[in-house]
Image (cartoon, rainbow, N blue to C red; front, side, top):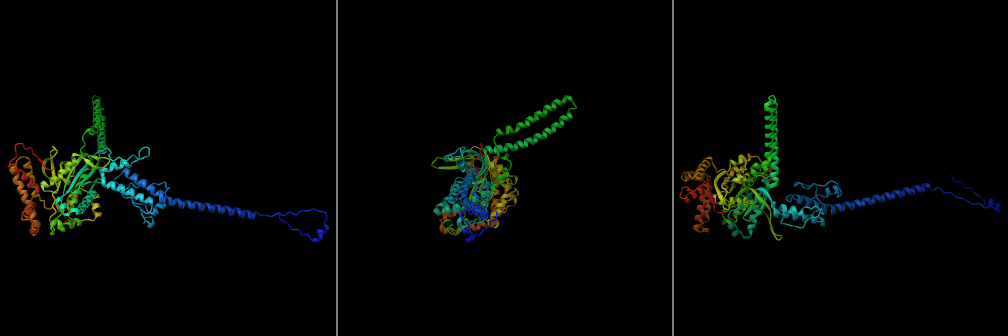
Length: 600
């Protein structure tokens, strides 16, 4: 109610005697209370917002500086456990980490080799400024080092030791995991004249080897199908390159699935044709039962065919796409051959006085050998030292092919197993040199070469940028064997007349008609010598030898000049002629159309 004020004067108070009275005052504080309650609510609400904001900031910093990097570390380990050969994922930018938060439900997929994140990092967020980032850097570097040291053969070791067990714990490190059977193409590449380089360069030989490896590895990775091209061993003078097709079990399963698809389509067509035949023959009751039985028999045979195929030895030529796979592997070797004669770092070694006596007569030369087949992939050694490698007669065969290049005077040799896997366009460019058995093997096989020559060829004119070279590899088509400028330039000294003469001589040689074979081989050698002489490069090299005569003995100069003149002809023709002359020019009675290569 509304309050009222009564005023009493002193006179009125004096007249009142013996009367007791009280004064009650009522105050309406509702508006003040409402204001106080509203202020208290607002204060608590702002305090809650402040606390939540503070927690969010702390949460963000914890995610960015601790939990996020730890989670990335686990992802990196999981990535390498799944695929040890994958490239290291790039670091997220500061911006992307803040936007995602450590508690985001969406997981970043880092299994892609091409993963990248936009945005520049602030200086304070650069890798290595925080302890967790240093741990990430260490994990990435260690796994990258393992991948580069052990290569594709050591991928199983890395994967087996990084993968989690069923109880969520990782096992004790065990480098000697069981090996596994794989199918692959094996290529050996070696630097010619390595002993001379080693004695001349001393500790600088490492620089030369690394310059060669940069070209070889780059072309191997570029032309390998997918991630199949890998360097397994760097042996100083030689390199083992592996183009991995896949695990034996996996390859067979994929081949069987492809076979099943083919047989299913054949089975469907057969059943359709037989069904129509049965319908037509039902008009004749006597032949209806026989037709039905025939239909069942055919169906049974078609279904059983894939099962029988599983028991057979796997033929690599039966794999879909193997010709493209093999073509690209061989192209990696041939592109390396062209690359070593246009790489500027390798060309600079020509002017090194220790190697070429200061007259530019030195050049880095390489030879290549390749075979295809199975191998056991795994680690060899103990807990103290292991080597991830491949154990197989096919690896040894690739090494024998490489060594045989010296005997035949060629730069690359392929075994028959590899030649059979090439595309038809590629096979027309390879020359069958001989039929042999190599040391340590009784298997008779043909050997093939791609005729190459670098003298008189300016490979730098055909150089392509890394981007365009990658596109050439990704867009490979078999007609590349006819249009690629590198391939055409290194083989420009080969004529149809020469090939016709050599092929006739080789066939007569294998047939045991050595007297007639020698005539054709000498003709082929003469044609090649005339072709090279017309280029004019041989005279320049003879002048270089004469210029160095005062720096070497007369005997050494004569030997080098004789060797140079022998290079004017065809190395394989000269090798076959030498073998014929060693046996008196007539085939022995025991001749069976092949010969053993006695040296490694």
